[in-house]
Image (tube, rainbow, N blue to C red; front, top):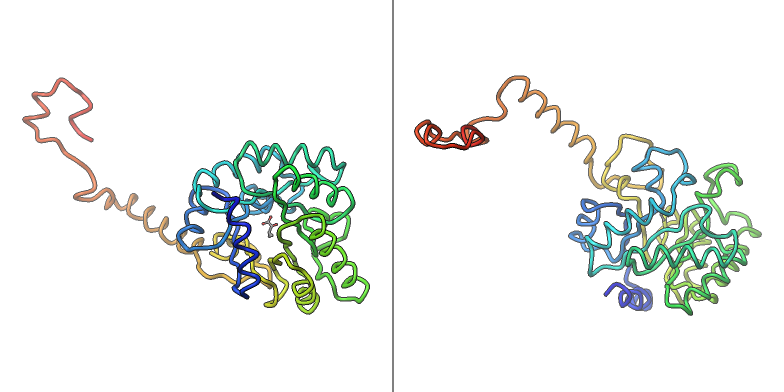
Length: 284
Ligand code: KIV
C-alpha cells in the first residue's frame, strides 16, 4: 500500500540513503520508473510542458492531473504515487485547497499530494489534510506556477534574506505536517542547510547534491524531447532521437515495400481459403 511508503522515506533520510524520484504521467513512464526501482513517482503539473505543449504549468486543470494520476496509480499499485495540485486549486483559501486535495486523493487513489509554496493558506490546509489522512509534500524555491508574478526561472536562496525566508518556510511546512519538501533551484548551500535543519526529507531538483533525494522530469532524464534541457538536468538516454531514427527506418521500409516481410504476416493456404465461408479468413 502506497501510504506505508512514506515512513520509509523518513527512514532513508535517517540512514543517509539517497531517495530517488521521477515524474510519470502514463503507463509507459510509470512502468519505466517501477522497473528502474525509483522510490516514488510524482504526477507533476510539468505535464503542461511535456505532454500538452504549454510554455508554463499554469494552464493544467485539476481534471488533467486526476486523469493522469489515475492512470499512474493503476499502473503502480504498490508504489507511492504523488499527485500535483495545479495552479488555482490551492492558495485561494484553505477550504478550497482541502476540497480540491480531497478530490485528487479520493478520485485517483494516490498516496499523497504536492503543493507549491508555504503561505498561511497552504500551511493551514497541510495541517488539516494531515489530520484527515492526506499526506502532503511541500515545494519551495523556484515555484514554476508563479513565474508570471516573479518574472522568470531564477535560482532561489542566494541572498541571506532569501535563505532565511526559505529556511523558515521549510520549517513551517514541516511543523504543519508536510512529510517531505521539494527544493527546486535552491542555491546548493541553502538547500544543504534546509536539509540539515529538517527531520523530513528534502527532494532536490536543480538544488545541488546535498538534499536527501533527487527528482527529475522523466522527459528530461530520458531525452524524450528535442527541446531545451535545463542546465541542472542530465540526459541519461536519448529516447526521442532513437525514436525518430526508428520511425525513419519504418517509413523507409514501408516505402521500399520491405515491411511487412516474410514472417510478419499470415497467408491462409488457398485450399483452406476456398473452403472457408469467412471472407476475412482469406488473408490476414
Ligand atoms: O511538476 C513537476 O514535475 C514538479 C517537479 C519538477 C518537482 O513539480
